[in-house]
Amino acid sequence: MAEQPSNQDSSSLAVLDLRAHLEIVRKYWWFTVLVVVCAVAVAFLLTQRQERIYSTSAQVLLRSSENSFLFPFPATGPLALNREGEIETLYVTSPAFTEAALLKSPPEVKVAAAGTGSTLTFNALGAVPEDLAAAANVWAQTYVTARYAETLAQNVESIEFLQALIAEIAEDRDAIRVEVDFYDDLLAETTDPDEYSRYLSQMVSIETLLQPQLAPLEAQISEYQRQITEFESVARFLDSPDVSAQVSQLAEVPTIPVSPNVTRNLVVAAAFGMALGIALTYLREVINDKIEGARSVEQATGLAILGTIPGYQLNGDQVVEVIERPKSLAAERYEAVLTAIEFASIGEPVSSVLFTSAVPGDGKTTTAVNVAALASKYMNVLLVDGDMRRPRVHRMLGVSNSVGLSDVLAGEATRRDARQVFERDGIRFDVITSGSKVQDPALLLRGDGWSSLVDELFLYDLVIIDAPPVLAVTDAVLIGRAVNGQILLTRLGATKRSDLAEAAKLLATNGSRSLGVVVNRDQESPDKYSYYGQHAEQTAETADA
Image (tube, rainbow, N blue to C red):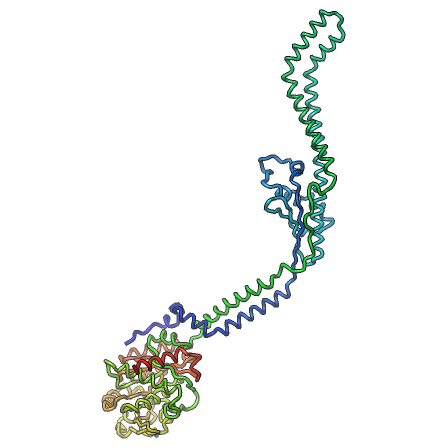
């Protein structure tokens, strides 16, 4: 007997293998596509409503030969930067430069230095393309102008600074030469040759003594005068703003917006829609407790699928398919169910089979009648309508229901009295209908009458019993105690997984052998659920082999 899975296992998607996941996605592919289309459409509409943002930029090329004069920062310390471009960025983002540009351009311009530090980029973002180009160009030109003015100012300041240093050094030098000048005056005033010779000798000695102090001062003065000459040469060279910095690229009026990015938004929306569609598909699979596929049947019951019958209709009395349309796909699938029963008899004979379902409307009566009709071609068959609450066998076969199973179990009739013969188009088998309506069929089934009746039916090769739904009443479980095979019916898209699992669990308690599950579905076409069709066909092919 197959081990029955728990309800928790049967309702969980965690145990699904890769094929089951792919089956879920394939089954609801149209829903995923619909979600993707909706997501892309919404993204497109929202994108069209967003404000268009444009971008343009102007570039300024820096003259590196002049940068050392403008920013004579020390080589170390917090102000020391690695690239000249970083120094220029520091300057252009300062309050002084912002104030200079505010009068001509709005402050939405961002400034960045290129990787080499030799270029500054003025990038403007906004909704009005013409204003953006004007803003970027004004900032760039303002920078060049301010850069040139700063260059001139720094050059003048440097010259004045060096001249002040020369004046200080000259004072120190003149202070040292006071004593030498004193002897110069004495030499100019004396007329005595001896005194002149003595003063001259003393002056030479003093000059020799003071020369080591005067030489460095003279050298510094000479060096500073040379630097002043260079600064004056640079001042003459700086006759145009383009000397220190130059606008190398003017900003053009942009025509293509940088935001929103329509392509990116649509791609992201499509990816989001696909993920959402698949997620909703799985959510539907979790919330939807209906049997939707072969794997959900197997997971709910732990039983094999014996066959899948297409074209089942819930409303109205069913025709005997194998008689009315013997070449139909449904008739072939009933043949597969019968073949599965024959296989189950190998090693452990199956002479009596119970057909039941979890809930009403799953097609148990239709299946039982058609399988009985097929089996009668090869063996001696008895069909028993064990559903004494809502009998339908007599209506399908067009036989009387005046005397039947309930009368035999109540002792009011014999088996021979209840037995009828159904015969049509070469199909012939015995039938015992449900019989007279009784108050409590379960009470009759709990007695020894049912077991005794089944024992008396040993002359038949196969006894097929149509029993009530398992979850509705206990009749099916009671009937199953006396048979040696049980088949559970379910209807695709209608039966709940939880109901099917509970029915299989209850059937397992009566000690009888569960042979498998037969699945009824509404669609005639074998293509939509080809997996089922292949399963049944493979079963039949195996049987033929």
